[in-house]
Image 1: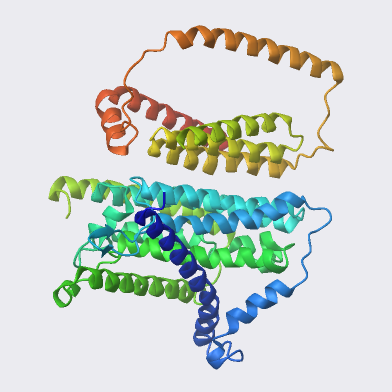
Image 2: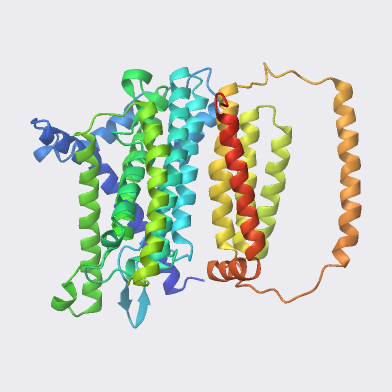
Length: 344
Length: 165
């Protein structure tokens, strides 16, 4: 029953789970520090040296707050909303390869929880389920602002899922596989997919901003129009779950972008200096996390630089801008493969 | 293990399908329907058809049901505002549903004996094999069904236009 492979997978799940939570926790701190830096302020600096304990203090505060479930709300669905939001955002990391793998005692253990042959579709499936957390929560609050926020979120996420899927199709055409592991392994050296798919990458990253409800597309929680958006009625840790899910989604999006378009755990020239496969794999993991941190920073950079879109602008961009561009990208990729043969 | 999973998923599918009909609140009905779709996707995974399972979740649970939920939330149907049907209608519906079930059971009972007994190819659900079958053996039906989708899409856009010039 308890084979070494099973134990290894179990350890890996626990490690990825805790790493995800810690990174999401410190993303909240990083966001405020980056915002402070971009706006020429200091940011949090009271709790611990450089304010390093700020996320812990925030967590304690969230748990200590009074928890209010509105009397007119639908109680079960009110609780179900944040649970779904949190559960779905933690599911995606199962198919992301965090490194090539470790050889322990002659057996090869890949640093990935599950290598399913439809990896990308799994990511899309989980992302498309994620919208229910917001929708259910927004509706169950029985508040007009929450409902409007939830409706905005759902229509925004559905619209941008289409463009996202189309931008991935061009990538899949080029790599010839849906397995995330094979896509990551197919970008050795400097042959990152972003060099062959610049337009696809641009579409994908814009859609990733919209899917994670990050500024400039954070209309579901647009406070100038909707008070707090879909989580207006939420308090205590339920609100914390919604906010936290956004940061986890950001981490996962950064990981998916780095894996699909930026070579994943591959780094050019590194194979010349390190020969031991285990060390190489661990260094690859470090590089992957470097790329992920860069993209998390990029998410924050954009948030504190670009103002929020208007809702009709958002819809116009999605349906009239990105979807035709994504279809054009598929067409161009087909032409490229026809003339130059398959890349890689 | 697989057998227990099968029974669990079947139980979940049937139970949530029943709850779709029984529950008074339309939003609950939609959520139970989503649960039914997940149970069916689980069945696909048990049959080693991962692609079908993923597409099922993305298309049905992820897109169509979101639109269902969207419409129902916009209409804001509640148990209070919903007109309740009379007693006689309920009796009539039960009788009609029961008769339909008798017919279905009768039809399926004879079909069970005539099912062809072939060795199950457990790799057919893999995406490569599925793609080859779709694009080689069933090319024409596949293309025709995509034209059908295109027609439906054009029709929806035409209907959605405010005024036709």
